[in-house]
Image (cartoon, rainbow, N blue to C red; front, side, top):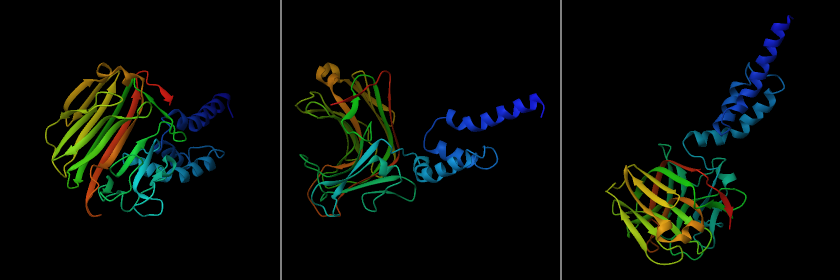
Length: 299
């Protein structure tokens, strides 16, 4: 073989081997390349590795392709481990969620591919709370709940959702920034109430009432977009393009010292009534980002 042909062949083999790893390594990426490069383009040594990778990541790729990356969330369901509405609520780890886990009643995909959270008023409650929930909790490190994000920096939760059912109080929490350190209070609860969205902002990190920010009507059983962003103390909430903000670091400097995490789902604000009463919320998508010097920290 001529030197230039041998050199060209070597470059081609290197390109076929290394391209998959240079591109963004997320769920769909390994799955796509495992199929694309096990046909005629990859080296014989790489084919069995990529084939195995394809099989392992197929469920993750399918779930992520629908707009849901659950690799950094854990799930709390309004039912005990025994399946009854008693005892400690069932928790589902990020590892299990990433395999495509669903629950037939409380956490499932509908025919439109939306992720649905159902929480009856009779559901099991977490410790020191009044109301049940079917809700995802962000986990920066899936193996350690103590690792959260520090308040300084830029932290954003974007979602598109639809409130399908509400309990008799007509209230359900659909998104939060929750404190982990200190008194572990929620910085903000995004609440759907009577067809509108309210942002309930805790001005004091340790005590006190909420500041209520009210947004234009979004209606029942209609898709709407929301964004919760904390950027160096400026907490901004946007509902269908309508934005309001408050400087929470000025309201209480203690917020700047807190460690926090996002929550998303259906946190029913009611605990009375039959098992058929509750809150049902569907999500077409949701995404969390941390940027601009955002730091991870433990309690």
